[in-house]
Length: 156
Image (cartoon, rainbow, N blue to C red; front, side, top):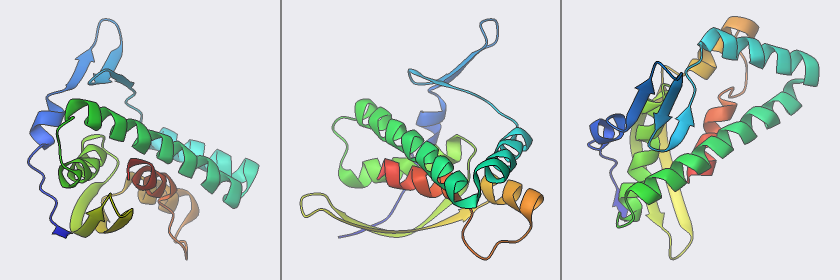
């Protein structure tokens, strides 16, 4: 079955974002979130690469992204227990956009959970991760959106 992602749930998801200035808390549903400068994340990336090397830094950031995607998938499953697989899959890219990571443009995906099959193509525009890598290391001959790939895998 060829599925088409709809971004009609983004306003509903955004309405679940809460900011409590007096206590210093940000939450999305019941999950505490943190608002960080992309420059700080770029500095962390640079430090990881310089300290651990590019392969180990990639592993750390990919696992961090995976954990984030996994948590978001659990969150949307709780929010929408009756949702179809297509609807749940549509929410992953919306969450990634809502969280300010990247604007996701769905191209196509096919999902059949019963058969254990998934295929997806998504365009990523305005990636903070690509921007900070470019700023600190210049152009790279391989993909550098390690946390985003981890997120997509963890969410899926």
